[in-house]
Length: 111
Image (cartoon, helix red, strand yellow):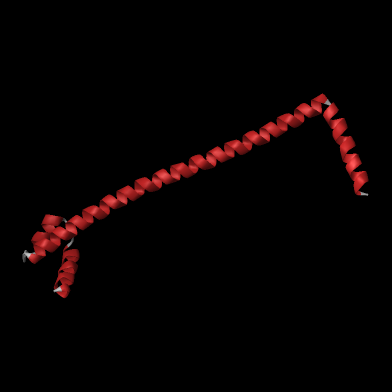
């Protein structure tokens, strides 16, 4: 049974490979499939790289913001240690009064 199927497939292949038009169509179809797969791989990789770049940029921006916040926080803490007024600290650091009062409580609880 299997041998008959194999012989039949081989015969169909032989007929197919001898027909130049069908063979060219087959090769063109295979080339189109390879091109499509290659384009898809390239597009996926390009999308991944764009995503990585966007993530790096967002990470840098977030790091800058955290650095600014940390600088303001440390400045406010030094000003609190020097017994400066909360409103004055707020004006100098551009932190909210609520943030400064929270820092003041933390500073007092650490002493």
